[in-house]
Length: 284
Image (tube, rainbow, N blue to C red; front, side, top):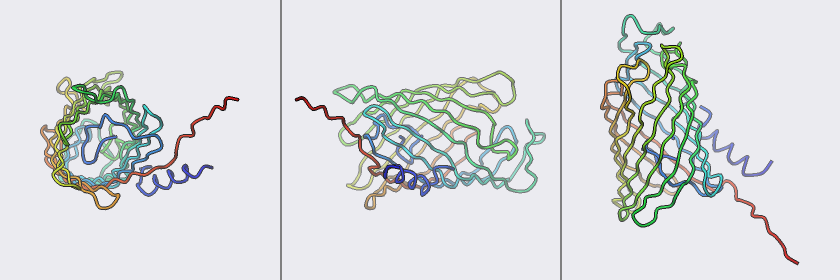
């Protein structure tokens, strides 16, 4: 087996990949893709206050451990992504009675794996003049978190979006507009197709320090149980120590089914895992 495959597998294990291109701590994805053979591994922890689950009726403070992703540049115009959460731990503070769909949670806490997301990003155009960089992204979210734990919907979800990126001096503005297909966990054969959106800014304030800000969410028909509308605002920083980029951010929920507030901390590491072998044609 080639050396780069072992290197990539080691990175996945180290960063808990088995447990979204975006630049941590942002959710809005970057229109740029990694160069061929480049791999970025992200790892973080999130602390969410007053997270509400509409199906199970559970509410409490949530800790997400091992929020991880691996991004691989697989060609001049494509990037592969895999992300997930090693463990969600909810400290239950209240319950809605009766719940829409009863769970099997009996005590004051519940845990489960987070959902696994598989995605790809395709480059459409480079930034040039007034035109921003453009990419197309699609992803599938697999229902690893089960409803029995009170933390999952047992539904597979699909996302697609157009990504944009524009530089203004050293600052960057990121944009994300698309739609999602969300299966209904309570109505057989029904689905919601909300609009998804995100706008983010990355502003360098020092050689190894960026300030970041973002608003993102999804908006569709109201009162869709299990497919509620969501929106949140984020502000934070990115900073480098050697080859590792660290991030710290605070998040405020803008809708009822978002956590009231959150704190995010994480790290990213990028390396060259393999190189493309270009065929050489000899003319005699």
